[in-house]
Amino acid sequence: MKIRVLLVDDERDFVETLAQRLEVRDFAVTTAFGGDEALDLIKEREFDVVVLDVLMPGKNGIETLNEIKELKPLTPVIMLTGNTTVETAIEGMKLGAYDYLMKPTETEDLVEKITKAFNLKSEHEDRIRKAEINGIVKRRGW
Image 1 (tube, rainbow, N blue to C red):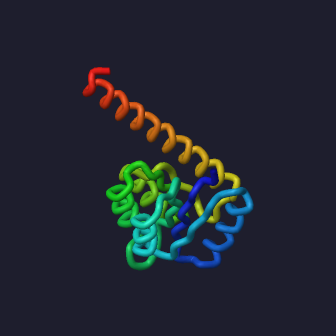
Image 2 (tube, rainbow, N blue to C red):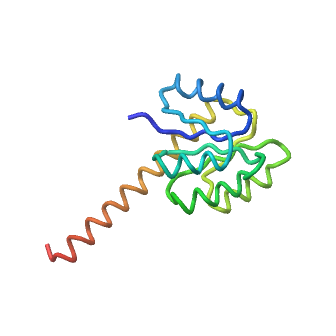
């Protein structure tokens, strides 16, 4: 199964190039060019990891992150930031982002972070499923 990644950035060329680099490495990539578009996609579909630019016109990365965490609290979000917005990326981590990367990013660094974030999400989901099963078993007295 391919890891489903949502790339969110207002710089179209950057997003399209990065999407191609990730697809070549066997990721299933969907792109969005702003926070509202990303949120609409997240409401419609499941993503394993979101890669989100901090600085975007309209709804910025922090606002978008907050709404993603309300909709899908277990979905890891990796913030992309330039030099001038490192503090904002760190603020994002305090608000629930998984990690951040500096732009321009090395593809291999991003691949590594996406893979680690996906593995962490999978572990959380497994623990939740086991807890739910244990709860059902206990309620039914099995």
